[in-house]
Amino acid sequence: MARWTQRVAKALEGTAAQVFLISLGRVLETNRRQSTTMIAPGLEEMETMTTYQYTLTIGESEQLALEAALELMIQHCKEQIAARASAPYRAHQASCTEILRKLRRTPAELTSTSSGSWPGSPL
Image (cartoon, rainbow, N blue to C red; front, side, top):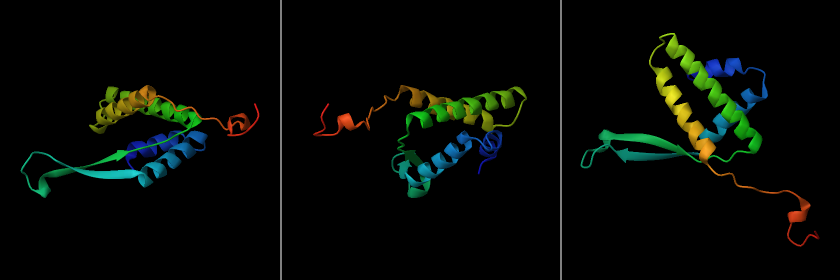
């Protein structure tokens, strides 16, 4: 576990957000799709870079918890950068900001579990 992940986990220790983040990590690990991309045409395989893409489906309360965790991490990074901390905080801040942007711009898919929406049910 990365140091910043440990710090965020410690800050959230004993909360529902901590349980959510642990579950999210497990979902991401199981839904990881690996792709290999050539850095430049014609280069051998040793010149490739492996990246991962994730597809994630979360509920409304999970989306709210994820937003809060990302905002907390962004704030933590800003504080570390202000204190002249080392390199990873700028990268973590940029990554979290981008994830938050994607999370907020992705349209929600509405579903219903009401019995009134079941096929053949009287309204």
